[in-house]
Length: 219
Image 1 (tube, rainbow, N blue to C red):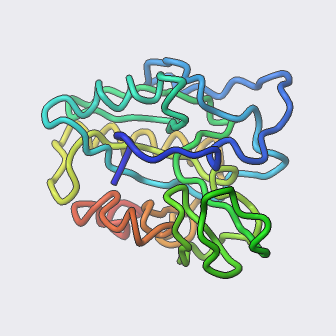
Image 2: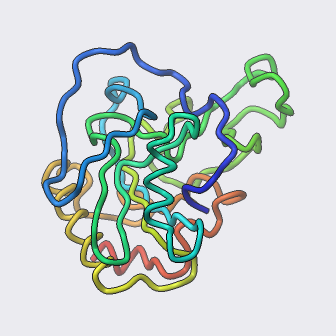
């Protein structure tokens, strides 16, 4: 469901923009540990939504494992933020840049798909080589969702409730994002607040899981 470990083909790097000056959009309530896995800027797109994830990973060490995985340049994955059960937050990617957390690619011809993949018709493909049918209402054909989302990983296991401190950290972070990106307010499930399953219900059906009531979080 979340950060650890996943098949990570070059889809995450797709449509990378050329290196250039980087803006600084860092949450003061987080410890910043810069991941090497990101794209500078957002390819001219604007943030439309916050995408919530659950890390899974080694029980009891989900937080540190997720952060370490995002700092590993061989992983080809990252998220903007990771929250811990104790209420700590690590920011791995500046929110003015694109994290590689929930990317998809849109292919219209069999000749366009990566070598070794199976053509399943025109549409969206996830990094695990499946054709998927996103239900995110703001998705646009051919636009990688990574460009238009801020990704938050919550350290834990899907289906298990988060500790109060972790919920508090998540709510505070969502408030900050709303202040910096007012276009996402009010948070509306399925539009400006989504779980990873809104993009990929095949491999990410339990991300972030039943413990995340998006309607309650949005309110």
